[in-house]
Image 1: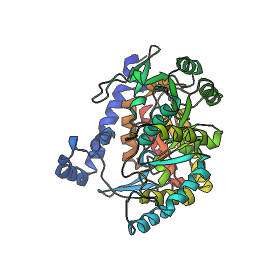
Image 2: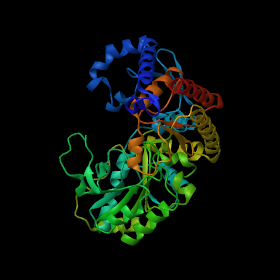
Image 3: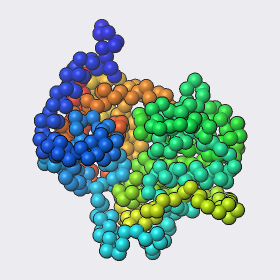
Image 4: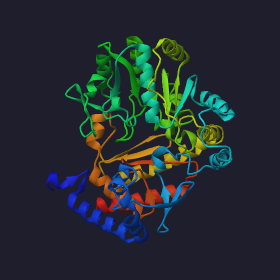
Length: 457
């Protein structure tokens, strides 16, 4: 029997190392133009990338994209790549959907930003309500901003100081969500840059699928809002237990907290997001990333009663800055793209195609995992599919953190890219867009099969 320390996720470490080094060499050797361009031009950026997380891609150096269309990228070395990352959901409906590209061209002739609404803004508001439910809407640039503003409203109308989040959650770079649960206590996550305050003063952390831990925090009387995704994402994906969301709704009502549902990733669930598909009832609804077809846009909405309570608070507060809003938010380009996406791109037919493709991918990956006898599993939420390098299902953020296998994932990601398939860099997420073809899905399954067969030989 091999020494357990020589095995990771069921794979011999020596074999993993050999394959990882081979795949890294293959990627680098195939991209001389990319390497030369980076050597000549990347030095103007901090750590040689425009955004720090671009260093998180597992390939030896970043790929430089020349163009993208549908569900396919082409890099500057001429390689065509099936894109299952799709901007980590930002381009979930494909790159530059035709109605969105048309809207951009038209609006560009009439100005990009002027701090005033347009007729498209009025149409987009009606479409947001039609698509996601009865909310009073505001527009932001990112879901991070939308979540941040929503929490300010929750604190304002409740008069309570804290937000309840779940261990291992992700809601963008909202400070309040940067906590974790250790030995039953809420602590600031380690590794935050420039952090000088104890975030446990403004946040409490419970475990997903654990209503008892939620109620224990609510009983303190300090919780203004519960902020949650319907499904935990941006890690190893965790599905809710039956009855969990009903329990959250009841507890929030019982203890006077607002329930905030962040659908930024789970918009993959179906038309209207997980909230519509599964009949959730949030007080505040947040969506971002793909809602305007890739144009940086997010929306957050308040149920009518919450909106009335907030307007009453706002009328009585001292004059001065509210701490919400950014100059470029709600610009006319956003509304043009938002209207085009909601009306013509985010359709029932699109989701039907996406669901069928995702089921095909999920089944194919599961069959490979079963055939090679890997101790892994696959999970799907609508058009979103993830393989997890550990047995499942997972029930909470603590289990998700233990299931994350960076060494294995990095090797597999680079190997898939060398075979023409791009998946999300931070975890093992794959999306099916309306533009994704069966042959692309089958190529990904075939590449996954080739690599796992070698890893588990």
